[in-house]
Length: 248
Image 1 (tube, rainbow, N blue to C red):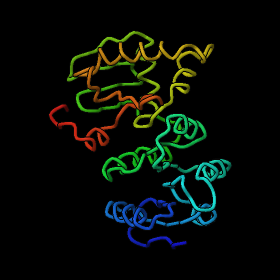
Image 2 (image 1 turned 90 degrees about the vertical axis):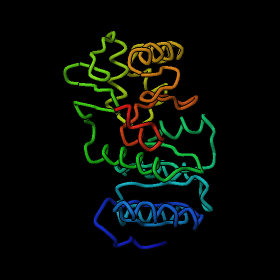
Image 3 (image 1 turned 30 degrees about the vertical axis):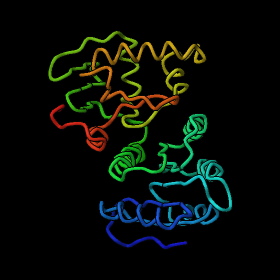
Image 4 (image 1 turned 180 degrees about the horizontal axis):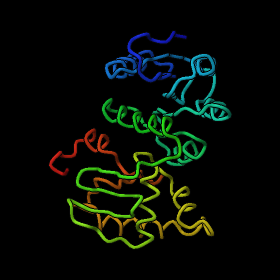
């Protein structure tokens, strides 16, 4: 167990991984951006540090030597209100969905880029700082969404959406930057019949992309997490994956 780094006064990130090189990589990347770091190699150490240090964010590897990381997530969500991002070499869609629905804020498959990871970390940390509230005005590239007044524009040109299309955009905007599973979206959009065929959601997403994406065949804003769900990218996430700033 490694004590909390004293560098800076930023949010505290608990890195839980049994691979020293991964912990070093994350420690360096986060500290360069002003975060503080605590480290744990095992599930037992992770839960002890979470209780003692109350981190703002837990970066949780699933392959721990004394327990599966999923059990750590379940234990944390019994009381922990901070953010959790799962890190794993496993890429099973079923597992990702299960972890997201058990309370993980995001899921990143190894190997990963530090820029995108930091962007995702900032998104989930904003959720912790401002729980339950979406920003009333969202701007990503050339897309502007006024959630309060139900107004949408692309490059300054108003976009007319159907009520259901705006409802989908509103739900994703309320969780701006976070992946939402198909089931979570279905519950929001069809609360009386959340087990409706997911194909209806896919059709609705296609129609929404046709309205707001510069290139619907290569979505920049509304991205698919394959077999899991969808995410409305933040500007930082857009930059991290290399979209041209000229889109703004």
